[in-house]
Image (cartoon, rainbow, N blue to C red; front, top):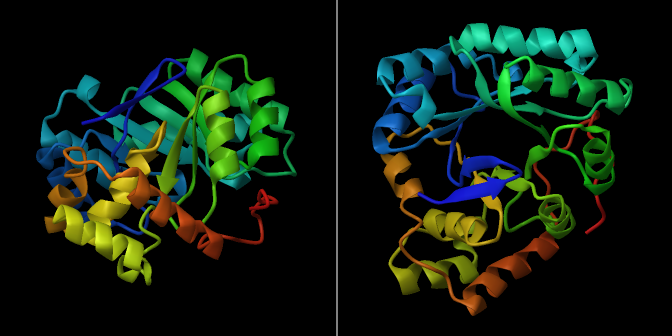
Length: 276
């Protein structure tokens, strides 16, 4: 397993995303992931599955120190008291003593960023979380967040896949010593797995298209991935991306797909994204 060193955090480069998973399906899949060797589990208050994730962690019998659990505070809960309350409730639902990483899920222009970041720092100081960071922050907001924070921010979790150009955000993360964690790393399938650049690399390395795309992510400096799957049999496949490497030409061919600029997660409350 590869780790990303980011401002004092050691983040597993591969994790399990749990968005849309719920109930026994979620708990069983998280348990299977831990048994397969995953140590990085990603959830959020908004996912309404923290209790399921916590149940799986408890059933796994894994040492707490061996796991890296991330959760996120929803954008409507970024006022200081609300953010801290959200973090405490997440811990209660997860049945954990502390989080490894607490993120602001989406920015909220109605709440002063300084206030939210200071509350995030308080969550860390009070022992609710070991590390703090943000999610869905374009470069301008990221720079402001870093400037506001007394403690180092360790990650910015963003939509990232070969159909979207996140070069500016990636460069900003690295300049601040942060990891960039890719959600929707496989672009939810779509036509990505049929792209000639992906198909050719899959054939050359005798790997699946999904493995090629995940390898494209983790082969880049400071980038981690949290693919979600609903099929336990995909867990081992998604994890088997650290024993081969794409050539410079293969990396470039897949990276060229970013000109499509196809963003999946874009909502009325989204910030103004960086221009490609």
